[in-house]
Length: 80
Length: 252
Image (tube, rainbow over all chains, first blue to last red):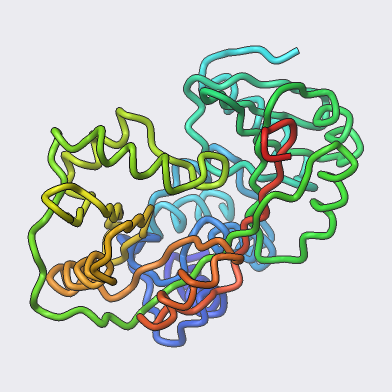
């Protein structure tokens, strides 16, 4: 899947999870930038991404994920 | 029963359980330095020791298996279980393993800054460490409030994360916060002064100065006075709860 398509799908997920209809994703975006993105909503987000993309993250991948750019990169490798 | 190892090895062991599929977990990005752990085929339980008690973290693929392990742990213990969902499963598990419901905390968040331009630059300095620590440990709850040790508190003071309040030239209030990008987390607030809400107002004034519009904190759901004050500043509950259970502590 192309990066653009991944971002588009992720945007819908992020907007739903954080109930923010104008949220715009970029590579540098992290929990520090989004209201309500805490440890609990992070787990909801990850679960939703796993379901929507039909993938499963490794725990180490989750621990290393620092921003949306990292997330997209991991999704890309899993969809290859 | 419990053993120690390097953080890398413990992380691998947690990963083994994670890959099987999580049935229940209160583990999230815990610093794995200086912890001990117990692992079965389906569960891992991590113990972090403090002066008078331990905090217990777990991840399991099989709740019955976890039940066996938790039931056998001795000594004073505290378990936090943060969730946005119904807590009946964890509640039943905890009670069947001998734990008692202790407190429930909830996240309150605020995206409306009520601060003004009158921030008073009144941060704690290193010489205030003992007084700040005294107030925190006297006024707050060591089991539920995740109070900082000397090292962490000193670092917060050096980082200018500790605002204080004076009465008769003595520190009578402490507000500790953590700026996280465009957000601010309120770690601790203690105010024994008679001058109302100066410290809280000053905190909000500092947020205005830093152009931070979103703040959040955990509040004890039984602490109606504090909830009322934060609501006056625009805080609202966001539905994230932290259910706290204890076993063998003095309060039980």
